[in-house]
Length: 209
Image (cartoon, rainbow, N blue to C red; front, side, top):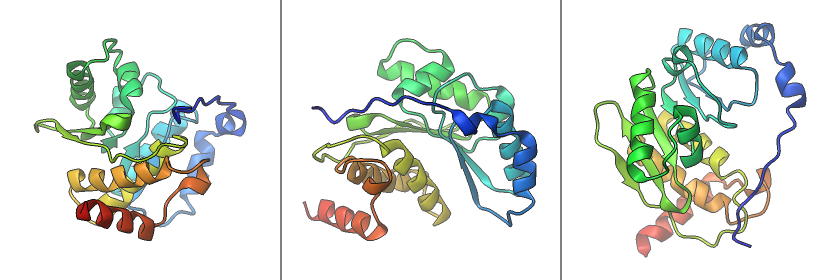
């Protein structure tokens, strides 16, 4: 009734992925600008992909879902860590979900090598922490929530789009906020993803209001 979702994972083929699979696939991939990964495959495949991406000077965006412990080696290869408020507490092993605890959890990730942490906070917006910078909070766009499935996925995809177009991290997160907001107004995952024109129309409407 409140538009929230519950997700069960049956890993199946995802957990059959090996480092050799990654290496063979990489031989067929030309230059890339960004690598986006969740934590839905074995840890060694995620680390291998991150290493290969950095060899090609690509930026790594890690969405730590489903949340689990992350090594300092992997974190040192991450340009943007994009958890939600529950995941950042789990991966940092912080336990008190208040504002200061969220920030200290993100700072801990940065101390282990992450360049920036973007934490999605649902209807509370997003927290942005970059190395040696003050935390920035952006408010969420208020929409009628139908289904939150894929909101995080669309947000992370929009991060890559905005950064690839040369936007600052803050402007990118504002754009990604709009993408996530539009996603929750429709049912499902892929069917709910907005087009660029829908996002631009939405942002223009927000400015008018």
